[in-house]
Each structure stands twice: as C-alpha cells, then as structure tokens.
Image (cartoon, rainbow, N blue to C red; front, side, top):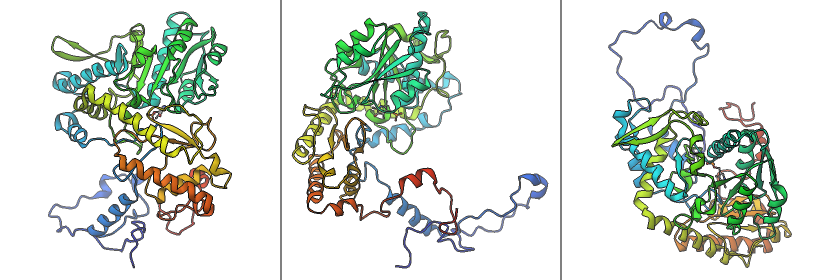
Length: 491
Ligand SMILES: *Cc1c(COP(=O)(O)O)cnc(C)c1O
C-alpha cells in the first residue's frame, strides 16, 4: 500500500496541489505593503499543507477512526460516568434560540434561556435536596473550589475565619478535592479509610476540632461504597462547627433514591457532564453547578437568576456573595443538555438510571470476583474496584491488563486510583450498556486473567492492534513534541 493514512498532513502535501482552483479575482489587489505594518509581516512564508479535498477527507476520517469514544465501544472508566449521551440533547442544544444568543444581549430578549436556567436550578434543587443552586462553575473541580469559598465566607461571617483553616478529606478522595481545598486557602488533613473502605467515625472524631472548616466527602465514595454512617458523620461535623461538602461526581448512583440534602450535606456540586448527559473526556466544556442549604444562600456566586412575576432576570445585589466565579453565567450549552435530559427522563427515568447503574456494576463485580482480587466484598453502588495483585505475582501489572483490554476493543478502566488500593482497577459500567456488552467485557477480562497465568509475556507486550504500541509516558509528558518536525527526531 503506497498510502498509509498514518502520514502527517504535511507529509502527503505536494507543492501546488489544491482542493479548488478559484477564478482570478476581479477585485483589484490591495497594496498589502501599505496596509500591514512591516513588523507584523512574517519573514518566511507560512508552510501550509497542499492537498486535494479527497486527501483531506481521508486524512481526518483516519484520524477520527483512531479516536475512541463511548460511541465506539464500552468505556468503563471508573468515576468518569462515560455513559451514552442521547442525541436528542445535542439537537436541542443546537436550536438557534439557544445557540445563537449572546450572553450580553438584553435580558428581555433572552427570556427563554433564562427560564431554562431557572427551571434547571429548580430541578437540581430536587435532585440534591438543596435550597439554592448556581449554574456558574464550569466543572466539578471549580464547583469544589466555589463551594469551599462559601465555607470560608460562612466561617468569616461568624468571626471564625482565622481559626477554621482545615479541610478534612478521606484518603479515597479524588485528587481535585485536596487540590481545591489548597487553592481555596485551606490546609488539608487526610482521614484514613477503615477496613471496609469507608470513613470511620473514630478516625473522624480524632481528626476533627475547633480548627476544622469542614469535611469533603463523595457518597458513594470512589470505591463505589456507600458511606453508611453518613448521618452520624454529618452530626459529628456539625457539632464541631464544621460544614459538609458533597462531591457529586458519583450522583449516578443515587439519582431519585437519596439526596445529599437528606444525608446532611451543606454544599454540593454536580458534574452535569457526567451524570446529566454531555459528552466529556475531550477536555470540555463541562458544568459543575453547586447547591447550598438555606443558611448559605447569601454567599452564592453572583449574579443569580430570579423569577419576578413572569419575567426572569439576573440579580447582582448580593453583598455577601463570594462574587463571580466564571465568565458570564456558566457553560450554557451543557445546561441545555442537562435540562433536556432531565425532562426526557423524568423522575421515574432518573431513578431507573441509578438502579440500572448499580445493577450493572454488581453484575460485573460478581462475574469478575473469581478471577481478580476484590478488596471490598460488600454490595457496591455504580462502580467497584478490583486489585491486580494476584496477576502482579505472575509478572503482569494492572497497566498491562489495561493495555491488553485495548486489543479486545474496550477502553480501559481507571487504573491506580483510588490510591489506597494496590494495583487498582476501577470499573464503572454505567446504566446505558446492554447485558451482552457487560458479558463481552467480563469475558475479555477473564481471558486476560487466564493469559496472565499461561503466557504473561503476551499481556505485558500489549497492545498489538493499535496504531502505537506503548508510549514512553514520561517523555511524552515532559518533552512533548506538539508541532510538526520535518525531520523525524529533530527537536
Ligand atoms: C470527575 C470527578 C471530579 C472532578 O470533576 P471535573 O468535572 O472533572 O472537574 C471530582 N471528584 C470525583 C469523584 C470525580 O469523579
């Protein structure tokens, strides 16, 4: 084959080749020298690829085929909720009335958009059990940071801002939790999980004190386990004068079943791009709305949306607010998708989401338990963790299992996270998969477990079927080559 579609677009370029030949322009040529100042002109002509339209099509189609998304195959990336996102939500987000408006146009002319945001806030109040919602934060991590600024504002308003400097975070937490706490100006105190993989009441009591600003918790946690002591945990934190933050990235496990409000949390974020149907994984945009209980509403980001008679408006007069946390009003397109998703699912549908997500995870866990170490035996919620320790003794690491899965056509689970499980594989099947898909994945995992026993080198050499084998990840991260280099190997 003389053309591999692996070539860079510059490598298939041939001088003078073009997609179209345009007729000579009848408009008189402008004297560019007179218009563009000399110092803004490039000295060497731009080097652009010169190729035909068909070559362009093949080039980009080949690139897209190298990509993997939830529409390509099963994507059990734990904690990330890589579920299928119904296309009707995409259609609605593209309606001209939603996509061709400007955030600075007069409110009178954007009533529909404001109404949608207002109604989404109302829906999210129900989902979270909170008293007020702000759609501003652009992602979960930014929701965390905004929520912690609210913690800070609350303690300052009570004259305890200087004293309450510590945020408690369990050792199973997502890395964004301690990071957000530090960025918000707090010190992080780690709480060790107990043998069951949960926050132990005793460990919490030991760590908590008059310097505690609050506790951040994910429930179910990143091991897929429900914090069964949550009501007591909330009481302990509140009795000590602290607040509770709910990392809602795992909301897919509790929709329509329970709310962070009922559990005793004070501030919540949801990752709309995870649980509420926006394609994610490519870097955004996301949306991480926060919700708060009534005694924290004054501190919410500004502006806020209000309904007055039948008019919707943004209000800016909130003297205790932590201020604006995001340009304009959040990522509106993600809000449209979330609203369309919630309305098309209905309360019943959302409950079904979490029931199916939990059922699928427990089914996979049960099928894989005989072949992999399972550090936590109890029923899981929407995801579960395995340990590759048994395979490690045979010379096969979790990374090898993940790479080998690619050959079987599956995206790999989250690996080496949470940090507290050795050789961790974290698997989240989501509710949108068919049983046959779950079975095919289980079969592949079992096959790999058998390969690890019979022929470990075959697993450690994977992947065999991808356009690249194993990358040197350290070099890729430390010395990335992100622009075209004419001579291979040239810096
Ligand atoms: C994804 C995730 C986050 C961070 O959310 P982003 O939207 O990616 O910023 C926080 N906590 C948990 C448990 C997550 O899975």
